[in-house]
Image (cartoon, rainbow, N blue to C red; front, top):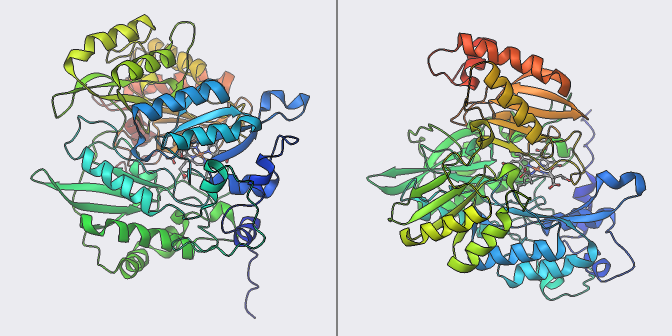
Length: 556
Ligand code: SRM
């Protein structure tokens, strides 16, 4: 007897009934009596770049609904006008902060429903948008943000933009609801997207471009990656990588983080066909019966890379060649002032957890507003939650430095903070994220202080360690690629992962399932002390942990 067919998830059923992604959003938006959207609309809103949240600090007093809005900003490139619009909208409708995300975007937090329409209109009026920033579609496309690293940066950025455009859903509802302000309601919805069909993807889909040797986008954590290959200074094509992803659940072995496979090489003119081919493999083979098991990484892990390569070849109408050799040497951003390949300058600014805000001591948000207004500087967001100001002429440097100094912002290469802080990331977690099990962004400063003290006590001074923290196992700050990763399990309890590498090519291993925050000094202190005495030469912490704690694993 054949197995009964597994049931489709609820999301699949509602997508099939509403392929335009309209739902009741337009009507509810214009109803001043309600402060929230219903459960189905919350799913459609994601495709529009919007998450309904509530302030978890205030739950005891009843739910206070608010919205998180995420921009679609391919390659993290933000023009001066768009930057100033985002800045203004965050002051008028949000919680007065802008949040640089781990996918080179900006998020607004704390927007209440009465301000949602105006904020969305404002974003679109500035010729930016939020379409497909979330939902079961291709998300924000990553590209190397730092202009000095390679003369290929601009070309690769253009390719990232093209892929982002080519993989956009075609529904007109986004424009009708947020730009035209229509209280849209469809009696019958027969929209069928040429790429996504009626039910879109089984789950989210993520793409990144990278230019070796710098892996500044964690390319192997993406569903689909493009590794630029050059010859004599010219882009000759890309190596396709596929099947990376971080999301997992504690105690569910069917879910796991995975580093992407390198699948094959193709020429730049085949980029869009190859992109669509990979996306449609996910569309057609991803698991629509279990959203926890629906990512492309599981399709590739279960069907094999050879099967996947053949699927891509058939769908793209071309044949992937053998991958070309490449090497990553490091990840992360450069800070302080640097020269670009064209003689202009760029300035890398570390932003703790990506939160652009003013505090009493450091008024980063005001400084950026003043500089972008006066000097019309382009802002770039990095996948490590930092900011790069680009195309600064040498004669502007002193004045810009002056503005930052007035606002308490350090523009030196060290940025006035420890190396471990420079290499840190944390997801937002509480109070905005509905999924978080423990603190992350709000706890990071304390954790960094404790780690800095422990390093000091163990004679490790200003050691460089990639430290990442998340409030749950979904992996939003990519903790499973960190040298030292903390993953929330419950309030004040974290799973600790060790052993990621600087190149961003190796997953960290679970070291301890359940560590209470008060146990950190003892556990981490012990590790640092062993590291100090047993490290080989200038071996990094992640490499040391892999060599000593998991000797049976291949350390590369
Ligand atoms: Fe994420 C869900 C924040 C990058 C894996 N992520 C969420 C939500 C929207 C919670 C929710 O579904 O209600 C979080 C909102 C928090 C808040 O209050 O803002 C959230 N994710 C973030 C951001 C803001 C973290 C950050 O510190 O910057 C990042 C926004 C990126 C962007 O601009 O598009 C963010 N999320 C990631 C990444 C990293 C990446 O893409 O490189 C991952 C791991 C890579 C991957 O996708 O495998 C990631 N987020 C998830 C998952 C797990 C998906 C899975 O495979 O199971 C969820 C949960 C879900 O989708 O149901 C999630």
